[in-house]
Image (tube, rainbow, N blue to C red):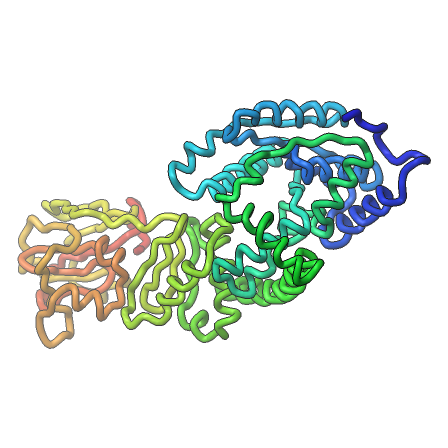
Length: 472
């Protein structure tokens, strides 16, 4: 097709003008797009993304938008290279910079969910382009019929009411200004402006669930309700408004109760467990997305998290895609990677001195006169009753410990349980050992080996650094 002159001239039809005004209203309303925004336009070359590109180019002068075009060649079809060249040509015609990359999506999927992998790869590419070009928003070409298909797809997967909200017009950095337009509207707009687009033959492949919904299910529903896609999109919009309210509730709750750390976060198990299930599910979902870095968590993942709260065991963990979630007594932990469990380690303590411990702390042993009471993270033993070498190590099977003040020996494991140490803390806990476990370092000394008045003591101090003045 031959491209019509760009912009709206005096002969512009009312339909085109109405489409443009509706588009402007979507940008400034539901999409909350501020004037002067730098924007990446995701463009596959299909009708939807071409309509998005043309409408944004029309809106750019009025809203002072800076546009950049991005096209990802998934390498799934022989003609995909032609699609890329078409998009570059359209961007050139509009005077816009265009970024193109090719990815082996089929190889990345490796027998997994091809559509999910393609989406993840595409979004990663779009974010990279946005970062490279200093763009704060990314415009996607999803329209009303896509929204209807998404609602049906999620219902069939067993989504909750959160899933019914489907795609939001504004989901920073992503914007979807075409959600109020039907597929037919957008194609009519392109035809009226004599603008071409590329057809993806895979969109008619009925082996794909979304294509069956589009070509078989929605037409059947439209026989019952003529505007079935519109009604489903309205359902998504109503659910989206509800979710906006819930999101405010979740943001308020997590802002107060969730404690972020370098490798994840933790929160009180009791504070989460006492929330209404409707709010708790949404809290879980936000936490998974925030710390897992993905947006495809579903009902099965939420159920797994809920079981952590309901389980009788005080320590339990689940491995989710991209995230490790654990219950550790009264806390819930979220980590990108499971904590590393140290193997067996041992350090010989041949004489008084300073010895390094895993985690960057040190143990200082020195002879001293019995006098002042031991400080925090410090213990004393009768020097006459301690024989070197001693050993610093972590636990071993069969270890037993006689805690100071306890009625007798017990398994070290039982002491750890009573002290509410997590699995990870137990594995890394340092022990000072002679003919018995002398000190669970930083926690409890053993029974006996107390110096009498006037005797020398072996003072053992857990310190932060080699200076040794500050206990850990």
